[in-house]
Length: 126
Image (cartoon, rainbow, N blue to C red; front, side, top):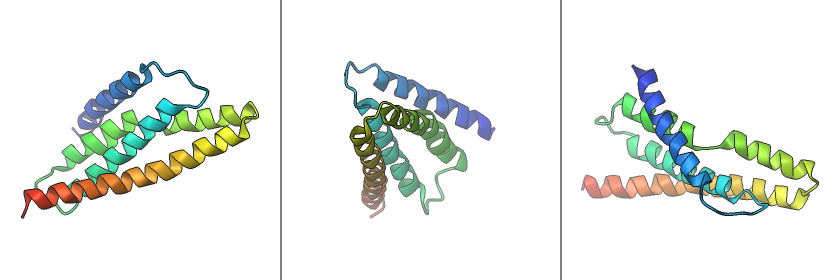
């Protein structure tokens, strides 16, 4: 049954990822992948923060959101390929900026999502 929850979430995450890829932005810099990874980091940080220490959230719900949706949505393999291609084309500065922004912004995204979850949990349970 857990596989079904992961598969359903994965389909939703993959469709959301594809929808973002359709945004008509043309640039050498892989901005849409960066945006997807940041949004995915915020989402997974929120999910983990919101689900922590809550008995009323089922394991299947967490699997659906964290493993399914986030797994289907985030694009770390695409990020790695794009960073490699930038280096392969000797665009070292652009590659370095892309890698640094991806890592730093996604870590910040996890923190923001986790803090947002704590704020929401606090307002739901006074």
